[in-house]
Amino acid sequence: GGLYIDEQSITYSTQKLTVSPLYRNLVLPMNEIRELSWSQMVVPVAAISMKDGECYKFIIYNKSGFEKAYKQYSNHQE
Image (cartoon, rainbow, N blue to C red; front, side, top):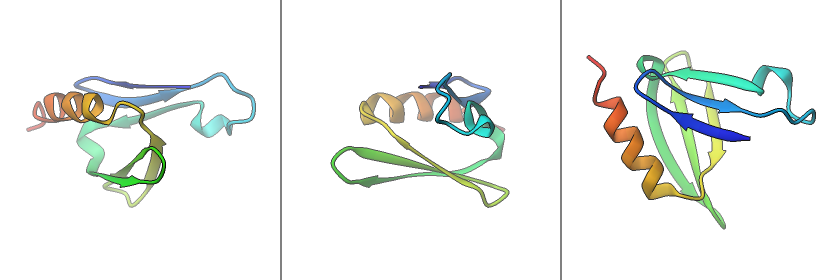
């Protein structure tokens, strides 16, 4: 799957049948994101906490690139 970020949302998209249909095209609107935090196992893991209490975790191989894009796009929020 792939994780895409723009000024509107962070989107996870995959066609893998082993992934629940609820998560195959998951859209997390920027204005609903409460916090982005990180943990480090073997690779960086991003935890995206939503205002409704949900939390989604993603393995991010390019942590610095993702953080840069997130900061750029999350600054568009009023």
